[in-house]
Length: 311
Ligand code: PAP
Image (cartoon, rainbow, N blue to C red; front, top):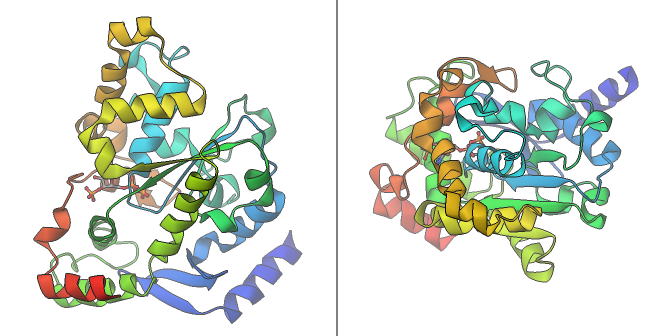
């Protein structure tokens, strides 16, 4: 392990670096702007993970709806075990602790002490990742495991990330929130692909292409579509995951109950999400903001957006 530690350190020293909002360190690994702290875990994930055909993996770029999708997927798949939504695990654990991220908690034993034992998880194992399709371990791509991908309008994704990092002290981003020069600077970086787990386009296109070529492998969803018609999307997710709703369940209104339990308003009000942290260093409360489609119009000028369109 020490040997790996040394190799990762050496590799880390040799790779190009950037800082996202404040001083959140990024490193360019396999054409991917990876948060530096996730380098070792990503390498372990890529080289050690053995997928089961029954695994269901939620993939996304940060700030595109990960917490929402984790909550929905966990609730859909476990609805027979946790049928009383007033006592649902989402009331006591943040979604990131119910569906673990490979490159954070699962392969990072320095994270938050919630590292699951992969061999002991009963199927279907639910996982999440921000790693792009072509950088995933071969066993995920070659097994029958399924991937649910969510994408979001790039401008809203950028603004959500901007707020997230400029609200936290940890990377000294605090105070930047309304600093327009800083927004412009970081928007320029985003357009160049320098963004956690970016470039944005490569990420989205990788999963989109696979969803077209192999629709049984990747279900491609859009945040905006989920907002517009959550019921149709929750049904689609349940079918894809192998847990379709029966007519009886539908008649009882279970889909509406799941949507309500996992709504932004509901999650935001849960005590567990008002305090505590996830991945060992991010605060739960910062995961829940406006969830508004088109929020970027409040922050980005038409000329900035034009420069984005031309890229
Ligand atoms: P993560 O990648 O760090 O986990 P992620 O959950 O993907 O973050 O994205 C957070 C965004 O999803 C926030 O968007 P905003 O900044 O534009 O408001 C957050 O408000 C939104 N969000 C969180 N939970 C929900 C939910 N249940 N429904 C809709 N949007 C949500």
